[in-house]
Image 1 (cartoon, rainbow, N blue to C red):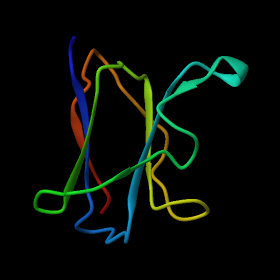
Image 2 (cartoon, one colour; image 1 turned 120 degrees about the vertical axis):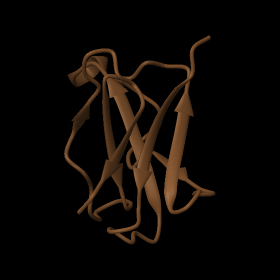
Image 3 (cartoon, rainbow, N blue to C red; image 1 turned 135 degrees about the horizontal axis):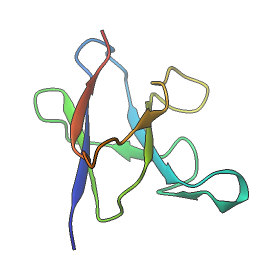
Length: 88
């Protein structure tokens, strides 16, 4: 199967913990990678966290945990499933 990766550069945000929440669908038909706030990412390389999956999720949010800062709802576009999101 194809493996997709989403990456988050935590250099500027400096979050203590980084989570990734990915999903497809809306409302009652949502299929997500985990319950909110998502999967905690560990073992960053040069402060860049990577989440790999074999599911082609349409949406992703990086966040610092329940009730803490988060990115906007990011959408995979034009068949691009690997990107690095930077918070400035």
